[in-house]
Amino acid sequence: MDRRRLLTTAVLGGAAGLVGATALGSLSPEDVWAAEGANAKINPGDPDPNFVEGRVTAVSDAVVFVTSSDGTYHSIRVTTGTSIWKLNPSTLDEVKVGDGLYARGVRMPDNTLAADSLWVNIVNLNAHVDSIGRGHLNLDHHGQRVVAHVEQGRSAAVYNNTPAVSDMSMLQAGKHVKVIGAWHPDTNEITISTVYAAV
Amino acid sequence: MAALYGEVSWFCCGNSWGPCGSTGHGSCGTCNSGSRQHAWPNASDACFAITRPDRCGENLLRRTCGHVHTTTNRCNGKAVATSIADCGPQTDLFCGERTCCGTVCGSNRVIDLTPSAYSAIASLSSGLTPAMVS
Amino acid sequence: MPYTVQALVLGAVLAWSGALKLFSRYAPAEARRTALAGLLGEKAVPAHRVLGGAELALAALFLAPPALTAEAVAGIALTTGFLAYLTYAAVAAPDASCGCLGSRPARVTWRAFARAGTLLAAAVLALFATGAWYTSILDGRAIALVIGELALVAALSPELDHHWLTPLRRLRVRLTHPLASGVPVIPLDATVTQLVRSGAWRATSALVTSDVTDHWDEGEWRFLAYTARYDGEAATAVYAVPRLRYDPGAVRAALVAEDGATLYAVDGPPPGEVPSWALTVQTPEHVRT
Image 1 (cartoon, rainbow over the protein chains, first blue to last red):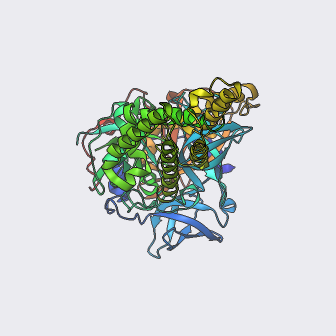
Image 2: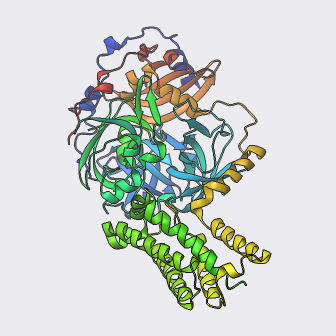
Image 3: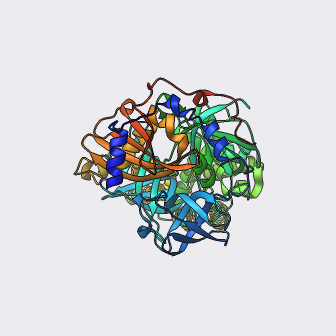
């Protein structure tokens, strides 16, 4: 909580000794990336060593063990600075065996991935809304039925380019939507994070 | 090619988990979520017949498997170079859709990146981002 | 009577299907989406047309006198062929479109099989016809049977769902409001989309390395924290975003080092100020292609 207070004060201008953009120097991505060397060595089409995809096989104190779909094993190190998306910003406690994940970070010399971000069970579906039921959408995703649950207070809808809102009532059966959501492992169900629809 | 402005999103491929379990390795047979790759709407005649970007007024060049495009996120300037590994996105389903960062906007879905490529320039939890493709 | 009117049912369905395959301007695109395209490549387009022609010719035979057993045999052959094609499509190209009755894409599902089965049954019944269909059509029961069979074929056709099933489902949603929200809340994604549209985000997001790590509300503000990297050092990028109004120009940002020092703070550059990279047409130099 102390950290939150410190950050709140910093961003609302209560802190002394603020530095302006010019004093900090350029913040252009070219300069940042040149300094980090983050993206320079990966050829198009090649596997990205700083990225892991797979399913969680074990979780220890600060390491998530993952088996990729190609059968390779990965250890992902989680720190306090790692963001964990599991529908909401989450903590390592909520990462369970059987979850699917994508992770981005920096590959360490011992071959573990020091994670900047974990996205757990995240899916991005382009689907057809077959019908709408009480609190959920029935989607046709490449011929497979997917039940997309609406979670009050969390699920958001973007209609055309309007800001995201919690009102889902403008969604229509028979239309196409894009859904970012959280998969319920080993089912055909997801919970909607954001649904993009044209109205 | 001249730079193309539009929306970028992401898709999974390579028999990954969840609803991606049955997607296979894409129309080029090489697609994997963990590789720096993308889907392009005009990768072949059969592909174009499905995606139909022309219905949204997008005149995309025919580029086949392995061709390299560079996608720049116009919200933060980060860019990633990827090669074609699949057909998509289905542009004509969302003609005229716009995504903006302030005054910078992109219209129509013109490219889908793999999760590894998209996460290099944006967060996977953001579904659509205005982009420049060259 | 049930036997003689089958020619009318088969004639009507085949005429509809054949005409769409031959004359619809979307027919070539639809042909390329079918499982036939996987089998024949570009030849799928002429093959689709030839099939349409055969369907129209058979429809004419069914509808025009005299009634011949050969017509029913041809009908059985064609509908059996449909079933074989559907089986092939379901196994070899489950994502492909059926290309059966109409120019709208529709995947092969149990409905396509049920429809082909219905037509096969009609063709088998037509074998036992003793006269032309128009000799018994004035009978009320015959009319009801024809209408019933055509309605069944229509109900089994996903290509026609947008005419009746989708409007019915929309009506149900209008009446029952299944997604109505009781509490007006501001979802986190609404705040995040407002943030990414702000000048403050454009000025700082190149330093951000993570997704949202923490968020909290205070008064009119919602605060979002991200991990950032500046000069090789870990830092926190924190943003204050108006919670209850949409005003990306009011977003504020700060970069705070691990030791608590504020490295950078910005109230947000004017919304109209666009960095050069957002508009540039050259390939950025920092990307290796």
